[in-house]
Image (cartoon, rainbow over all chains, first blue to last red; front, side):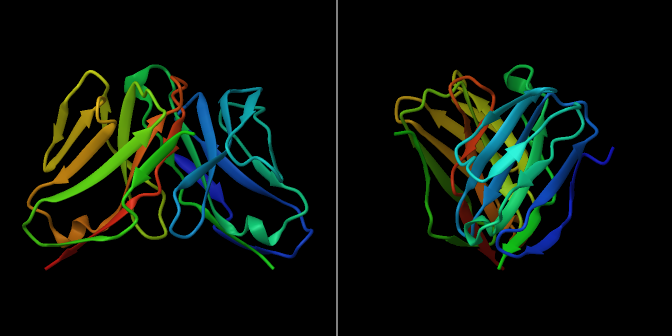
Amino acid sequence: NAGVTQTPKFRILKIGQSMTLQCAQDMNHNYMYWYRQDPGMGLKLIYYSVGAGITDKGEVPNGYNVSRSTTEDFPLRLELAAPSQTSVYFCASSDGQGIMNTEAFFGQGTRLTVV
Amino acid sequence: SQKIEQNSEALNIQEGKTATLTCNYTNYSPAYLQWYRQDPGRGPVFLLLIRENEKEKRKERLKVTFDTTLKQSLFHITASQPADSATYLCALDKGGSYIPTFGRGTSLIVHP
């Protein structure tokens, strides 16, 4: 099992450009998440999904969009990139079925710089 | 407002000593609390989960306590090693949703 796979690992965007961060998991997890992590800060939840076809906003959703058409994939779309979106982005997944299955598995992250 | 607080200052200790990290929270009633380890340039890795009705949980050299009255969890690493150097994050579920909300983490540096 590969776990959670994120692509790309690094990306530089110009202000106003758009891009999609890809995330795939092969553990058949129901829950998937996107977090961003700024230097010295914790993980802030952008969007999450509790199953295919269901998405919801997290703490910092502005400037982002997501979709969940399959259980495996949860892409994050940035429209009109801004310098404030410079960050490290982590995708994660968890089973979500009961307290003992809440362990979140993380991808290796995407380091995004907007210039 | 809801807050999860972890000491932002790095904890420096000598190899072999016990490291103790703190996670405090306000305006939460979590059913459980999790601890993760994050190495530089990597995603967090799950370590332990403790439920609200558990006072203490152990796993090898790790021990976690959970005091819902004090709204605090303590994370201990006994016989610490330089390889334990990392950032440790606590996470709570948000209102029974099973969606982890993270503190900012505390950096642990174990000196040989």
